[in-house]
Length: 424
Picture 1 (cartoon, rainbow, N blue to C red):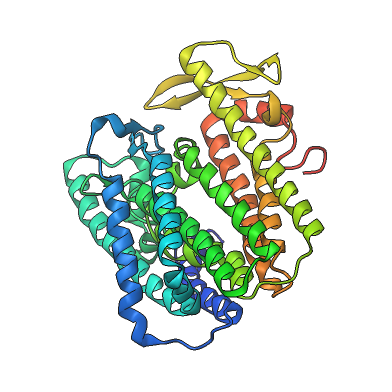
Picture 2 (cartoon, helix red, strand yellow):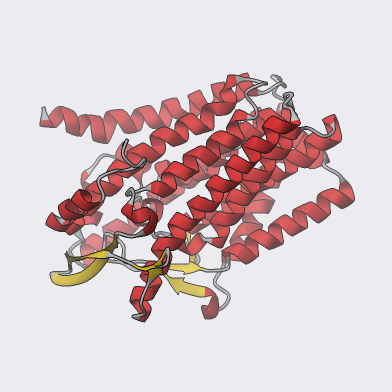
């Protein structure tokens, strides 16, 4: 039984994901696109746009000054990554350039990308596979050098012991660099998330030029733009999430951010902008307000945790909702040393363990449901996000159980629910 589980984990599932996921994504985008033809003569033009943006994103992330560099949290392999903290400035600059450019020159580029969305997916897919292959080769070389130099940390031994399929899927390193630039910050934040914003905003303006004012387009564009803007404003908090602390740079994360985010995460916007459905003003305002409220509370949940951590570091009293924050004093081992820590029990974090995910799901439903008049596949991102976040809840709990042990059991007794108070 154990051998079957190992084979499924290290061979069967990774193979399925690497082969089937791109095919499913292609089928979904192809079915959702009003333009079924693929004009391969536009290959170079799309590749040129991808390369130009990639160079721009890399240049803006390069550590020109030590003042822009900040340390991230201690990783599971005991390393401490360094990140560039210019995320929100990069976001504002990029959006400003885009808005001014579209105002001055129109939306021809985004109408072109809208009409050639299937071809864009194919080129991004190849680009992503090439990039992940580079990471695999580079990781194998680095691990061979590390193995000769000193004994590997136990978390670095796993990819060496596994087969190349799993190595390609999960990655070899937690934080590889390309000439001083952290790969995961480049692919996750500067490439995937920013292209998501560029396409959503660009298609919104392009839809207006082609079809005129449409309330469904306005709602989905506004909600996604504010959500992504919040992400970059909160980027330092993202460095503490599972994506950055627990996942290696491989197909799962990097291909996902290079291909899956720009083409699947944007699907609701693409469907709504390419074939705008009818949505009355009253319904639009209700959905917009619901989405804005969910966005606000999503931010508040994350802010409470960051504020609590900041107060602990500065050794200041912490007040949440007008009351002194309650917490559980815990201990865990790091490098054979006992480390003291605190788990927040006040505010949203005293109601459920992941209330931020609950509000994120409501928000995603709001920007997806407005496109249902065009096709039910507008809800694809919401369905995917639901299963992603639920699985992430259990992954996070497994990580915390291994880290805190008996203290985590006490925490779970105090905060009984995962996502919805009194229900789940």
